Each structure stands twice: as C-alpha cells, then as structure tokens.
Length: 289
Image (cartoon, rainbow, N blue to C red; front, side):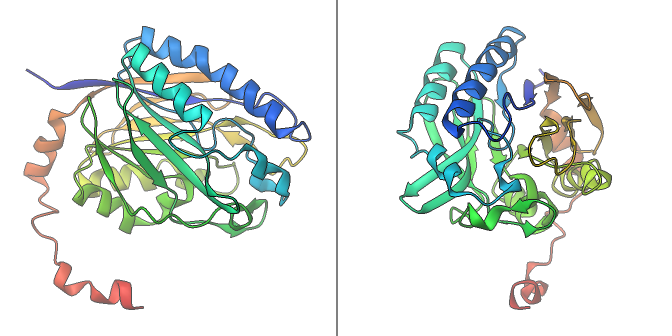
C-alpha cells in the first residue's frame, strides 16, 4: 500500500503597514492564519508549514530595535503554545516559523515543529544569515543558528527544515538528507528581481541530489513602507525527481496542497545511488577553505 502524505503550505500577505505597532501586526497575522490552518486540516492536510516569520512583515527591510518586541521564548511562548494546542485539536503536524528569544538580546530566526498530538518536538534555527542590499539586514536581528541540521520524527515521517537564505547552501541540504529527512520545508521571504530565477532551480536540485521531497514557501505582496520588491509567492511542492507537484499563485493568499507519495523516496534512491557513491574522505577542503 502506497504511503501517501498530504502536505500543505501557507503563503500570505501582511495585514498592516510596517509603521504599525509590531504587537498589533503580530496579533492580526496570527488571527489571519488560524482560519487558513483550520481549512487546511478540513482539506485533509497532515503536515503544514507556514511562511518565514509568519506573524510579521519582513521587517529586516529596516534596522529598528522595535521589532525585538515580538520575540518569544520557545517552547513556552504564547505562539508555540497556541500552535501546540491547535496541532493536537486538528491532528496535524505543524511547522511554525517565528522570532525566537533565547535570552534578552539573543534572538534567532527559528521554526518550531509540533507533532499531530500537540507535542513540541524541537526547533531549527536559521544557520545562514544574510546582510545585503537592498533591504535584507538580517544580522541586525538574528544570531546564526547553533542547533545544526536536525530531522524530526513526526506522525507523517522524518521532517527537516531549512529557512530562506539557507537554500543557497547545498551543504546543509545534504546534511538534512544524511540525517534522514524525507521532506524538507523551506519557509522564505524573497522578492522578484533578486532570486526569482533561482526559486524553481535550487530546491528541486536539492530534492534530486538528496532523494527527498521539498516544500518551499514564499509570502506574497509588497510591504510598505519599505517596498523592497514584490514577494512573488509561487510556493510549491516538488518530489525527489525534482518534478513540481503543486505550485501556488504569484499574488494570492492561499494554502497549497499536494499528495506526496513517500514510496518514491526509495524508488529514486534505488536508481540514483548518491549516498552510496559519496566520497566524504575527499571533501576535507570544503571545511578547511
């Protein structure tokens, strides 16, 4: 019997202008996402991932300390607790990107993962932090991740997480595969004219090179007052052959849903023996340079 998992991705525009109080935006964005999560569960989604920093705008377009006010501790912060309750009630695995406070002054771009019974399984902290024009000033807000490349055993299978800029680095994508990932989610915030030409190249390539599924999420719309570009949506699932299974619109809030045949993982790996044929003893230069 085929092992079919129904996956979902939420792409969304922001509710308020970025000059609004951050706490107000946070409340509104959580309120906006809850019905979408509910609908995904009604549609049979078993594992659902939200977009990068889902409860705010992409505030890294400026460098202002007021955004520190929407950080939370995990797992005891209110958003993680709400999502644990929601996952249990709906019987759905949730991947929830948020702005984590480890302690005052130490903050991470983090995604928590919650099992279908409401159990907090852990977190991934974004490892690769950009600091580049125009408008991606992430080093002002985030410390580089220090949790490695964990893979989480969930009710649907082995789930890995990579966040936005991470996707440009094949080393972590390979580490997730070696750690057992069957699907890797990449919640993102990326704009047209910068990375769109890479959007449907890099992550299908990771899926092929590592023999797993990928769920890539991007927000939609433009975000005032910064207007660093159009967040072009087009969230998608691809399979271990790099084939697109479902692709979202460019400019609409929506839940993208696909049925993922996890039996394909073994089928593909039995043909393309990339893990067998690796030569790690020849790769020392990669970490010495």
